[in-house]
Length: 140
Image 1 (cartoon, rainbow, N blue to C red):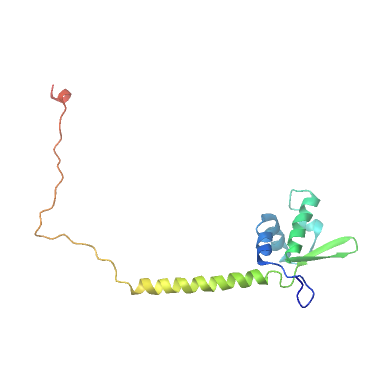
Image 2: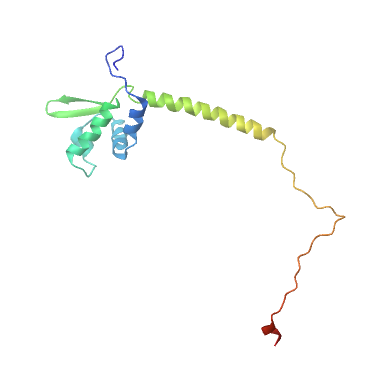
């Protein structure tokens, strides 16, 4: 669905699905350094160019990268704000779990430490039977 700027809103699931693949993650990491041509991005991977182009297509559909053609070269770069939805979602959940862990910490710090039961000196300890039985073979 297009937003007010005419761009298509991408679902959060699509972003995480795109990032779930190691090849696509490596492309995103490389593009975090700066723009690169498709050939340069494909070079480290042992796959056919059409297969690699499918990976770029998934990243582009997820709104993570954009590409443009300069002459005969297609240049790819990270999309501005392409990872913001994922980062916002992660930050929200991180804050939630940090609050929960802080609450658990407070609960545990206020808890009474467990006591170790002591033996009553007036009782006689139980000593296990240490006698051994012999078989008829051992007696002969």
